[in-house]
Image (cartoon, rainbow, N blue to C red; front, side):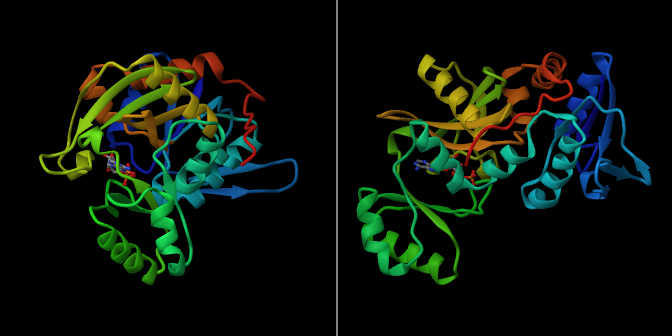
Length: 301
Ligand code: ADP
């Protein structure tokens, strides 16, 4: 197969691993900087142009779109889709997953376990909002945050109220969430491909830190999932319309709850914590599933 990895840099760990895994399995691999692709959208002849040449004859693409480049990145993925090229993740599913609120709304509609979560616009509604999620302690999250930045734990009602007021005063959109204390600063990353979990790891936050992000000093190791956790992660990826996803769960005393579904999950942490060849499994999935007319997003939201 001829496969394009849409990525800013060949040297990034995940890009490099996918490139190697595809080459090892006998495929023609190309790394394409999606920000340097431009498009021709003439009727009947959609094209993606890169370094002054039209990209043609691809069987599949693997999008690795950075969070801050979602708009242009998904436009390039969509252009490949209109050309009939199979994408490991479709443009609509990537856009959907990038919005934390939209993600939670879709998961709740499917009855997937979530932390009790609230969202409001007006600071006049703060008291009601805090009550609706069961009062302090609470976790307050910036909708646009990543890597744990903008995720705050407030122990008291007054602290919660002040933080929400401060964020709203800056016009930042936030989620207010029940604090899952029993998770003990640990979360679980499930790597889903198709309808299977190919690898899973736990991330434990640094001592005294409730956030488990590796960027915040957490460390990762292999973990065995319960059947309920497995089915929650697979259902969450499916609900978002993602074929390749990193689903983050917390172990709560009301079962597994999903925090986030990531459409461009990194390979470095999961491969080194588990020893699984995740890149190879993504290529294998494309071998089994890619083909003309196989893109088919059916999620309504
Ligand atoms: P980001 O996308 O910035 O990583 P997350 O929503 O994943 O933000 O939160 C970062 C970390 O904070 C999580 O990995 C988890 O360890 C912790 N955390 C987030 N929400 C909660 C919560 N409601 N209860 C307990 N811990 C949480």
